[in-house]
Length: 263
Image (tube, rainbow, N blue to C red):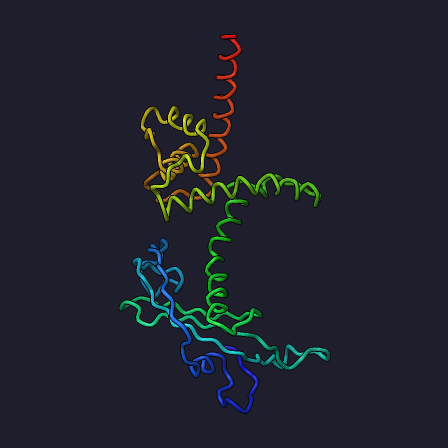
């Protein structure tokens, strides 16, 4: 709750109090996914707010906005630093959360314009995208083992990243669709030869017309995933995908040999 500079319009020099003075300018609905409590955090008191278990729900969000000047603490000021910094603030608060559930409460500081409702919704979309962006980074670092390459030069790191990004994107897309649209045909993501390899490796238990969820779970099983441990993580997905790629390469080579023998 940052301190603000006093001005003629407000006698409340703190951010949260200032936001309470603003009337909601728009409402928005957000689908909140279910979340399990982490191990060792069975009680609400032990769990951090963002890690507490919750049931899926459709949240109604009030949106407020304000232009403010944050006061720089005295001990942080230097000779050439200003006494304050101007920022735009967007406040997103859930109006009526279920009993015992923490309401959605985001306070977003930004340099983006907040002049229209569309501006505010765009800023909120930027913030909501951060979880997907973090998953993309995990797909690169853990799923594709980017850091384990132990490259030293900037040029080599860039080349490795350029080769890794398309793979990480495909894995992220598959995992995302397996959660929000699990019935999506696997053929929209993976090549027919890849699906044939998975069907062969699973000894006929792989569906004839697999979904994205079927294919992702199959790859995770190749990476050593145990179903009782919950949804597969990036490490087992990455290992399974790497093994599936090698098997697919061998599959294609074998088919090529058979065609050459027939000629």
